Every structure is written in structure tokens, then in C-alpha cells.
Length: 373
Image (cartoon, rainbow, N blue to C red; front, top):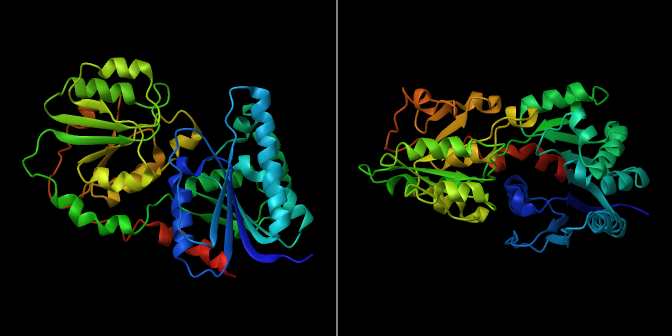
């Protein structure tokens, strides 16, 4: 039974939660790869599904959410069985999976169809200790992928530091399979750059801040930034976009005129929203190794759209992008914001475009080359 020139992509978590995989699929759509792609993922309630209009890229989603642990476990198994049997039917010669949660069907398929080229990409870095105390089903997935890492054709992380940590954890893997794919937005985000910056009123006040992403009192400096804005009501205005917003935070901003929560935001609408903002916030506390060495997609999205960026000093993954030119990328101690910003001033003028430097098309070049062979 021979393999076909079909590529299967397995992404256990909903695509809508991960802009980098949406960008990769958009890059694949515009590439010259003459192959069909079959994408297998999951879906949850209250999500506007990511769509891609190309006949050669088909997306199949399975609903797995459940309040009951046993039923949720059964749905997880169904996802793995569905993915495995779809691959047996399609017989792809290349399989890409994202994160250990997606590993099981891809690795089992590789064990049966040995000529399959197996690609793995990790949005996050997980320490061996975190695997041991994490979800059991993820631990099972990881056990089978670790045993078979030497058979992989490609293993990638989002930055060099995370990749170096991964190499230390798994020294049995040969260096020639390792790659880096940063979390950059699409090149066309930069095409709107001039429109974005010219809409800023030079005399506008207050300075408009924006935060897009998950909000957690334990894992982000959301309380600290709200308290800072409460003390500077005339200077700054903050709009927050997130899928969920804890009741404690709703109560905290209830009587504030310069902080508002605006619900969730579809990824395709992010450039439009950023047109009216001045500064983008990154608020992760760095409670894990993964977040300490994180250079998140929002960092590059803010920069490409001409916003200054404030990031926490605990996030070493952002250090190399710190800059005093426009747009400025500023390290902030969110436990002492006033002192951190003592030498910072927002310059309301045309920003230097970063789109040619930070774009998904460039980041995915090597992967596209591998998939084309």
C-alpha cells in the first residue's frame, strides 16, 4: 500500500486559539505546493471558526468539550481514532502535528507506514517535570513521541532559547531535524501600516493602550496595570480583548472610565483594532520556564502594526527585541510601573515598519521547502 502526495495536519486544540497555525495555513494556501492538505482539529462553543477558502485545504473539526471527565476522555480517544483512521484512508506521505497532545495518532501512523515523514511543532515549551505532573493523556502522548523522536524528519520551536532547552531534555535527537518557526503575523499586516499610523491624532489624549489575549490574575499582571491606570485616568486608556474575563476584574474596573473589557476578538479583526491604538501590552508573569522564554505572537503583531510595546522584565524571550526606536519595545517592571517608565515617552509620530523583518511567509520558508520535496 503506497503513500500519496497528501499532507495531514493534526492540531488537537482549536485552531482559533492559535494564530501561528492560522498563519501557517494561510501561507500554505498561497504557496506553490501542489498537494492536498487535510487538517484535523477540535472545536468549542462560542468560537467563530477560522476558515480558509481553498479546495486543496480541508479542515475537519471534532467537538470534544464536556463537563464530565470520563466523557471528555472518551472524546479525546475518539479524536485520536478519527485522526488515525483518516490518515489510513488518505495515506499521506507527510504528517505535521502540533504539541504533544496531538502526537499519538501521528506517531502510530508513522510506525505502520515507515516511509512517512513526520513533522512536529511546539507552540510552547514543556519541561520533563511538567509532563510528569500534567494531564495523563498528554503524558501518554509524550511517552510515545519521546521513544520515536529519532524517526522524525522535523522538530521545531518558536525561538532559539526554547529549542536549546528542548535539545538538553532530549539529547538523543540529531541536530539536523531541529528548526525554529517564530510567531510572526502575515506579511499583509504590514501593508496596512501607513493607514494605521496616519489615523493617530498627534494631539490625542489619553494614550491608547490595548491588550489582546488570555487574562488571569495568577498568571498575568492585569491587576497591576489596572491599578496603574486607576492612578493615571487622564493620561492612559486601556481596552482589553479576551475570551474570558474574571468576575473579580469586572468588579475592579466597574467604576473606571479609562479601562474597558470588550469581549473576544477574531484574529482577522486584530489589525483593524490596532489601527486605533498607541501601545500594546504583554502581561505574562513568567510563572513557568515556557513563559520566561516566550516571545509571543502579540509582540510581533503590535510591532508590525506600528504600536509601541510594553513587556514584563521577567520575559527574557522578549529581550532581544527591546528597542528605543519607533516603534519602541520597552521592558517594564509591572510591580513598579512608574519607576520603569521614568525614562519612557510615547512618541506620536510615524513608526518604522517591521513587516519585512517579522512575517510568517519568511518564518515558514524552510518548512515550505521541506513540504515541497
